[in-house]
Image (cartoon, rainbow, N blue to C red; front, side, top):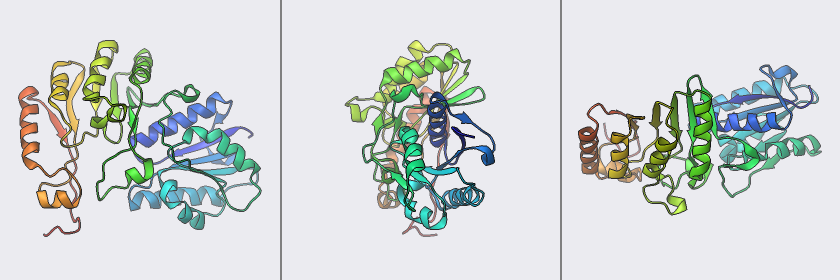
Length: 315
């Protein structure tokens, strides 16, 4: 079917948002989304490349689509895995028509066009170096609705040098979206009856740093709660140790809409290991900040992650 697509989204909620944005971009251009691959003209896989199991899943999905691809169908590999492992994908998945990375997924229409016209045996590749979250390009929103909840992306990329993480290599440095674009989309979600607004990025507590804004997340939350008053729950994901400020604690504690919940990956509890990981190693800060947060929000729920088996760690 001409101008139709089948889209597979793998990986995290941030990828889900990008996939929704790609779908909206194609829909606005007159494409029809299909739930079965055999009738679609364009097959798109938004890959995940963060850990080995995710890369393996991405390869398996691409291989299955490539094995059943018919004449007149185009297979596009997009997203995180393509940024670092496209040579591996090319070797393992014969039949890829085109590649597009994380920084300019909003050029998907041109990638499809170039893939159709590409006469070489090598896939058409589109990997601009300049990162952008595409906040207003093509009028495509940066959220994904799942039931009564919605993930709203406020930034993309990361400027942290954590030794175990490939995100800066995949996504580039942090790029924040303008607050007015975020609020406009939050208002749209409110009109659609969303009950939980989940703010996401690689590091929400770094929001606004690239724009020269201090305490950007706290300021953004104040603007959202002042203008988007009918969404009862607002949740914040992916906070970075050392950047949970007193201002952020205050706005979370005093705004009834903001859930007393914080996702703050600590990764380890030993200063030497944290230094090896290139993570904040001031454990006293962790204790003091958690104490401050619990004083302000006694019912606070904290989600975290820890890494075991990092090089240098003993039993």
